[in-house]
Length: 264
Ligand SMILES: Nc1ncnc2c1ncn2[C@@H]1O[C@H](COP(=O)(O)OP(=O)(O)OP(=O)(O)O)[C@@H](O)[C@H]1O
Ligand SMILES: [Mg+2]
Image 1 (cartoon, protein in one colour):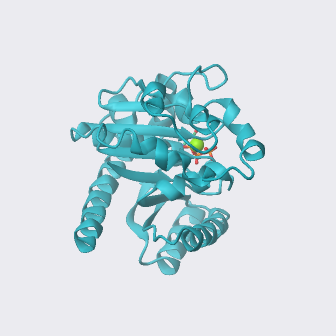
Image 2 (cartoon, protein in one colour; image 1 turned 120 degrees about the horizontal axis):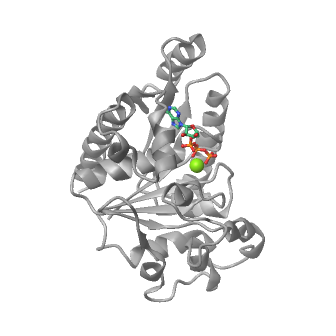
């Protein structure tokens, strides 16, 4: 299994949409995909038609056993989705209470890693969706991740959020003594607006080594897909937004394969 986290400390930048889009496209390539919703708001869970206020089993259950994950627990929390090849480990609203509960629990940052280890051979990819706030959930996601995808909305303020996220990443990499390669993905790009064009240029100048070479355009079909409860490529397989994610996926696969080869 390969684990990719999708995170940014800024809200509304396209994290959940990126997880749903990439999951659908990985499944299209015949990969077995697990999407994990680590956001107490549960947008990804809602995307796939479940209500995070009422789900019975969720990622919250992983955190109920003093830092350990009892055998078989992860598998018991996973559900199929409308997309063949994509399964979901849902979020529940109770995840919001974790910050308080997990203080001082030994190994609390490794719970998601331990949980995913139980389904390591069941999936080719796990994609972790994150809340925009730094806390125990994001620390867990980054501890588990082999690659970080960092969506950034192409508008002025989003670049500040990116700085903050990269500082957090540096801090976590230091404390966990591991390197997490990352790809910054410009989203909601609208070539007709100055703010979009200028912020993409700034991103290119500031993060030349990490910025994905293209951008995900504004595409209203993403919202339509979430309302329909299906992955974007199942809603419309050839819309310009889906085409952009398809290109992103190919680049991510090429990049992460290369990293793997170098490590061997
Ligand atoms: N490329 C895009 N074009 C147009 N709308 C988009 C695009 N990507 C996402 N959206 C829409 O923007 C909104 C925010 O997207 P999304 O929920 O993916 O962001 P997020 O970073 O996960 O937000 P949060 O921080 O609240 O979890 C949603 O309504 C989504 O449908
Ligand atoms: Mg989200």
